[in-house]
Amino acid sequence: MQWREATVGRMDTTSSGYPAPALPAGRDLPCVQQPEVFFAESPQGVERAKAICRGCRARIACLAGALERGEPLGVWGGELLVYGAIVPCKRSRGRPRKPDVAA
Image (tube, rainbow, N blue to C red):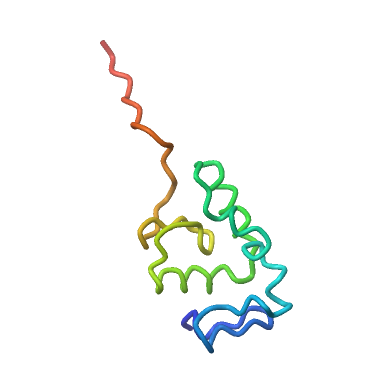
């Protein structure tokens, strides 16, 4: 099943390809209530958003839609997308630490 054919609660995604936010069934989705959480800057914020997604009934449809649209950034369906691709985790800002070298 493709994400456009998915029905989430009473929210049908077939008409425009995007869930209709005006429907009452969609108001209880976490991404509608607090969308800024899913575009976190810190690795801790990203992990928090992924945890929120784990219990969402629209998770699979959300991820499939984001991949199809090539969403550039954010947590979609419990996965972090960067430039349209799934990445396992968000790196902290700045240069990566050098590994300790035994002298």
